[in-house]
Every structure is written in C-alpha cells, then in structure tokens.
Image (cartoon, rainbow, N blue to C red; front, side, top):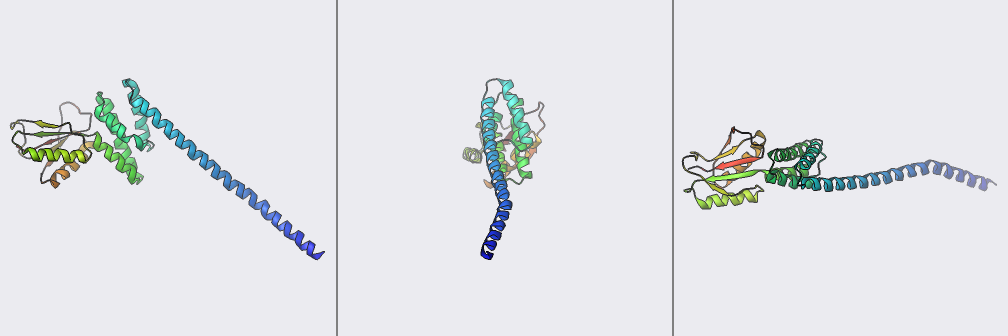
Length: 229
C-alpha cells in the first residue's frame, strides 16, 4: 500500500508539473508561430511595396511618378524605404526630365543615408551613398591644350568610382580657371565634391572645392570639374 501511495504521490507531482509546463510550452510555441507569421507578412508587404513603387516610378504619368516619390520620401524619413530601390531612385534622379522629380529623388537618397548613419546600419548607409554618387551628374570641362590622356584617365576613374559622366566638354582658355576647381551648387552636394577632389589628388591633380551660386536654382545633383588652363 505504501508503494502505491508513493507512486500515486509521484503521479500527482508529475501532473502538477505538467499543469504548469504545458501552458508555458504552448505560450512559447504560440509566440514563435505568431512571430513567424508576422515576419512572413512583413516580407510580403515589403515585396508588394517594392512592386507597386517600381510600377509607379516607371510610369509615363508625371503626376503618378511624383506621388510615388513623395510616398518614397516619407518612407525614407522614417527609415522604411526599401534599399533594393536605391539605384532605381538614382536613375530617376538622373534621367527624369522634370527637375522637381529629380530633386525629390535625390532627397530620398540623402534621407536614407542619414537615417542609416543614425541607426549605425553600415550596409544600408553604404548602399545609399553609392546611389547618391550614381545620381550625381559630373561634368568635366577641359581646354583643347589640356593633356588628353590625363583627362580621359580622370573620367574613367570617376566612372569606376560610381559617378555618372556624360563626357568631356571642351571649353575656351578665356573661361577656364587659373587653378583646377571642383564646383558644386547645392550644399548637399559638397560631400560629393570633396570625394571627387580626393580622387583627383590621388592622380596628382590638385583641385579647389568651390561653391557656386547660380542665377537659377539647380535642382539636380550636379558637380562640375574645371581643369586649369
């Protein structure tokens, strides 16, 4: 009888332990299931968001592109803009015929880079900065007498660094500066001008970084390299 009694007590103890453990286990796995569902839902939402933005950003309707960019700008301010679309935005900034659209596109990339830096997300920050470089139009100005090999080498180097150069423009001696200059027109483009100046220095070309106040506002991200006479 005593053995049975002990056995019964053992069962009671196991039953009590199970009474405590089963709800805990169910709660744990229930949470894991909800987290997995939430993660899957978020992935689907991001996928849908990217697909819809791509469709609107490539639309022929200017208003639709502007609305898509405004929505993207809001996302970039909160750090929710998809990094997969950084280069798409860079292309919009370069190619769109509407300067206001190009300006908003550049702002999106600037916001994304700032938010990534605050969040210490090095990967996203790197992607955003690469897209900013790709969205910056760099104009290379040289006189006919300037060493062509050096000019072509500089153009190729800047392109390899991710900048967009439409070509080399030949200018007269009269308007060329005494010293080589990297000119920018908006304060947000100064970091890009500084990077270009450093790249040029590595090639033995000293350049002064100079801010120019244009007669008309330049909405696009633009930098000009003026090689000396």
